[in-house]
Length: 190
Image 1 (cartoon, rainbow, N blue to C red):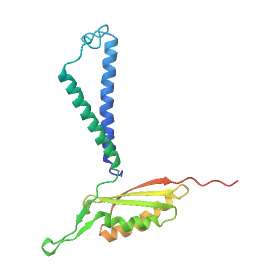
Image 2: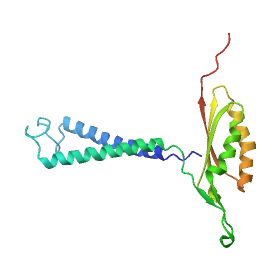
Image 3: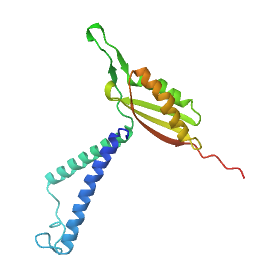
């Protein structure tokens, strides 16, 4: 199961839209070049006349430029949001007798700290998303170049994950683990 990635969806959507616009512009250019009937005359000028455009046209161009600039800023801001949204679980069975709230960041903090003690692991970050009964765990593990990813993954699935499920009173937990390699590879001695 892949980790939730809102910037990825936005990027794919923007790239698909840009691709469609470029495809349409290329098709229109080819149709104009070959002089297909009903389109533009290839011998005509790009804009009629050389005079200054009306003032309202300049305002429209400026408004479109500002809108495009704001959309680009929104796109850049979306690139910074790399972690899934975290929340608070409400674990009450009988609301009349009280309620228990658990921040998902608090729930996975010991889990991430345990993974950081494994050999070859430099850092770990975990986040829980969705409701308690339908939770998804996303784990990002930063490892050294020579670390055994298979051994780390085995320890996570056989030791840390069962403990987390038991602590959260969950029979199973959907999990996505991502490994990122940090540091330089070890030099070979000859």
